[in-house]
Image (cartoon, rainbow, N blue to C red):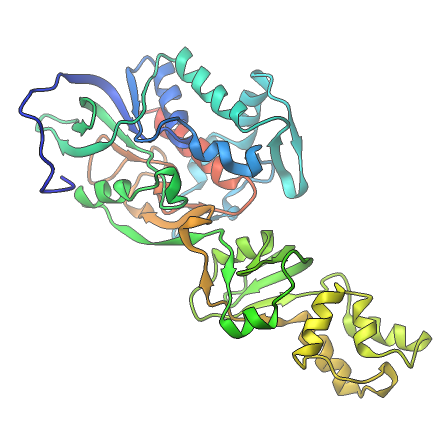
Length: 409
């Protein structure tokens, strides 16, 4: 039970009996429901929001980066790296693409294997709702889960703000803690702990960094500048994409990616010029323009406003190229190829794409997503400790884990 102070009406509500009850009408929950429905199971999905697929609708700038052509187990964080292999191999990105094409949804490719709807993310939600209709699934919105109990003879009873349910299989697809304005809640973690499952510590992931005050002052005025970089964590993980200076700190795809591997107090190393050797490039410029200042040479290679800020901060020697020593060339090379920033923190769940951590994979079957300690209880999607890279990978985990559970519930 989640709260000792919940007062229930003395009027007995009719208990609805279903084969499968899914908590959460997001990507994973709807995928699980439709697959279970097609197997002839009676399925109801409950969700406290007003509309299904709320996170799908706002994803990808409203066009939903619904999967990635390059999806593989290597693109996911999980303390057991083998856990994701079964579901991802049995329901691949190409299986989901086939569904998208079958519904006539136009889509396009972007960089690094990302796939987006041509028109709107609503197309993906409409597709899932249509499939659920065809499969006979009932979706009950604005239905808050108040209590979950295991039944003596097997199965579960779930009390909601609307109806009470009894089910053989209970699927938790309640998501993580990201985007609280969309109704994110820790209910999935509470249910896991209620039935003896371990929940690994959670934090915001795929999220912008905030900076310490001195760095915010140092980079004041750079908001909107984007630079193609290689960004590395202290653990050695590296991503090559853009970084974006913001009013609060650093964002952009490379920063969001590395945030999943960053821990408080750690440095982040940024290679501002991944396409070249700065030392060799500056020497080549010196051959033609020996009197050119180092600052003006760097302005040829990086945004002017950024170089001016670094110059004002004393990070650029006030010399011409022909005045620099061999050691100074080496130091400048190292500085721009290994430019280090220590973030103050992240912007948190408010702007994060996903939640890192969650229900421990050691307590779940990798094939079915069933809880090892609680037969008939399943955890899928973001509520598990599986976190994908930016670029459609988290949706692919939702589709694959939802499909896997949908085959057996």
